[in-house]
Image (cartoon, rainbow, N blue to C red; front, top):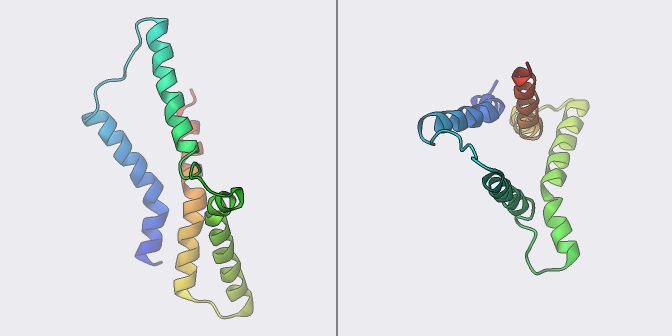
Length: 125
């Protein structure tokens, strides 16, 4: 297996490890609100962050169809890569480079989600 493919597979795990190390050694202990006003303010900050993440790249003054194409670009490219790889395998002309690219796309699509579900399963009592 190509080293780049292995790195793509371990990418989400490395990001999670980096976040946990930063959280443990650099950031202070978790903020614990003393009253309901502090708790509400903390949740409002989280809500604003999620709103900013959700609207990132979509607030440009443009036509609605341009925004739709921009948001669908990643799934479209991933679908094309997966379809070209499937055609190559079925036609009997496999390519190592194409297989490695497809593995990277596959782990990009599903590796982070799988890591999230695995962490939730481990956190359950």
